[in-house]
Length: 467
Image 1 (cartoon, rainbow, N blue to C red):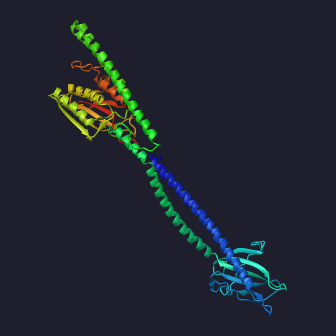
Image 2 (image 1 turned 120 degrees about the vertical axis):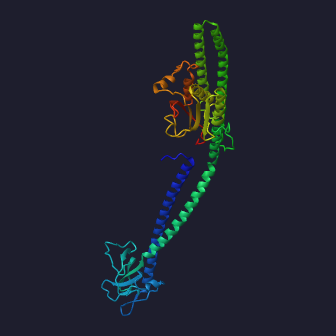
Image 3 (image 1 turned 135 degrees about the vertical axis):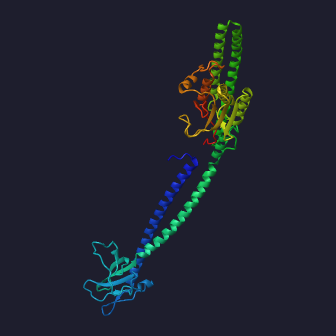
């Protein structure tokens, strides 16, 4: 699953890295400590081995004598795994000396092949004693007198001592590393959140621009983000200038064409009826075509601008109020949910599209027209929608005769009028379609619940989720 949050990515990477590093460090330290403990244990046995050698002699009767005092009570307690043994070697025979802890028990001895002597003529190996203890054995052979009589000396120690020591150390080590790791993660998280806080400020500033609450990225940004903020502000200013220039050019063109078209319409009134109607209809068609292309040029200049925003409720209320005055016999209802709904398009474009739909509905309605604006659901957003964009559904519905599917297809064609008895040029629905498509929206016609025509507009809305 792809993580979209930059903060979450950094926190995840630092958490994974810290966890892996601490585990590796813990295992490495534990391994090094084990080796050190085993080496120290072997050095202790070697020291005890030579203490025993220094304490044993051959008496006047040729018997081994001596009572090694190794300073460890475990050599005096039975079945502890801590023993010492001095045995005669070669042709010299006498009773061996053993520690009180060993008693009459025997220590298993491997062959020299299995555990050879080193260059100091010492060997170390592990065996299991009669009591089930794992013991480490230090063994050597020494000559005790000038007659060449020799003895084999062994000293053992319980390996559990090393294991307990390593286990205790590892437990303390892992607790310390865990505490250090948790503390480091908390400090890292706070440092990351503090370090990335300017990005949150920039995101909040973008949200305010997107919501129409601000026109620039405002804030005290650090050096790393300040160039980006300046470029965004410059882009917004450039976009605003382009929009204003396009509006001015469109206005100039509309003004320059307004007078010639008006002259043609006036001249049509004084011509013969057949010729006058032809000139009038062509002039009106030309007027609609010019206005349509002017609208498309103006919309293309500011499409996708973050500054395009219109609050739906006040704009639609003005349209409904005008329609009520013009059509006193028709009931107009308005529903906006939620009340703060906003559309990502210019107010005049919204008023022109919805106004055309209301005029058509009022022209064919028997007694009532309903205008509603709601947030679009997932089932009506269509292929144009994306997970990162918000959409609004505006619907105009009347109780008139409605249209059949084939009539709907004809009605959407430019200049087609299904009812020639009603006034108009037949350009209304095509203009609505063109304006909505320029904003990447769409127009849908169907039969409504009152039996009349239902015109539904899917238009881009304003969302604060710009991250």
